[in-house]
Image (cartoon, rainbow, N blue to C red):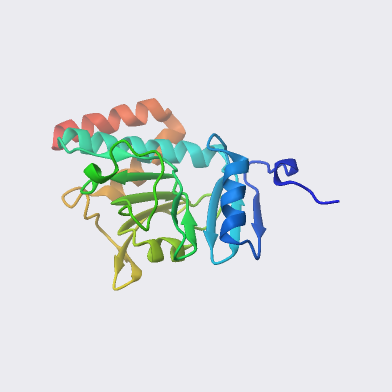
Length: 212
């Protein structure tokens, strides 16, 4: 008897790896799980990873995403945030769902779009991954052409920039070149663990208004 995927129950923090999955099967799995789901998907050349984040993963994602929105708003910059939308390119057989993504320079290209096709649409100007339950694989992003990728883990924020087709670690963000983003993210995410998320965000807003 064959099991259907919806019969599998993944708990928070768990991962499922499926091999030899065709692109058509991957598309069917996406449809079966639907858009309103807790699981995150990553697909590369037949290997499908399904993971369910832990609560601390979601908290870090929200805080870092909120900090990015505050900075962009305070600077008067237009942006579109598409959350954990599926970024996929059938020709490259690659797909990934970032924890958060922002279109800044390419904002106009995705206004009004709920689904993206990386064979037609530009990649996000900024993608954010929270690596508290698993390690983000860079291959998907390299092949899709995402230029700036933030990865937050237990050791803090790491900025990766695409250079000559490969990601290299950097100590600054091209999207926020004048701002010590690594130091700030590490400080306020850590603060949220002791004083709470709303207090940490309010303190960050105060810092932004004082310094910029």
